[in-house]
Amino acid sequence: METLKQSIERLKADAIKSQRNWNFPNEHYIEASGIIMACDQILEWIQPIPSTSPLSDTWISVSERIPDQGIEVLLFSDKWIDEDFNPNGTRIGYLDGIAEWVSAYWCNYHDEYHTRTSVEDDSMFAEVKAIYQIPTHWMPIKTNPLIK
Image 1 (cartoon, rainbow, N blue to C red):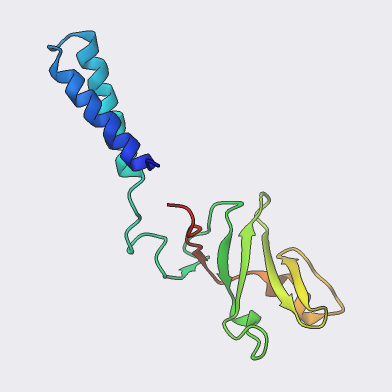
Image 2 (image 1 turned 90 degrees about the vertical axis):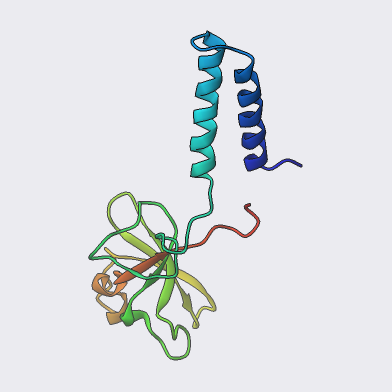
């Protein structure tokens, strides 16, 4: 099966071949030029992201930049470090549409994941206070390994 990159490269090659059959300023020549330029842009867009990009293994401080809303990211806060259940202090989460952090953490008592938000405030439990639900850093999650 042909990949997207192979399809675009084939389309570009076909446009170059057909362009050779026409003289400028013929409308077919101009149309083929547009196809070639579009193919070049698509091929540039689908290139693998270099390791120096935002998708590297570098933590980004939320004071410097926040992720796009609704995009799942890896989150960190030193307040989330638990020697037994979360020694890395990380959670999976996202920034929702009202500038509120939503994250999931493991609850050993219930033996399941729970979610917390950055506006949640439970007076009975200090660890559930909203201030403790705000990450200090985030990192993009790499794409699914099945996506080529």
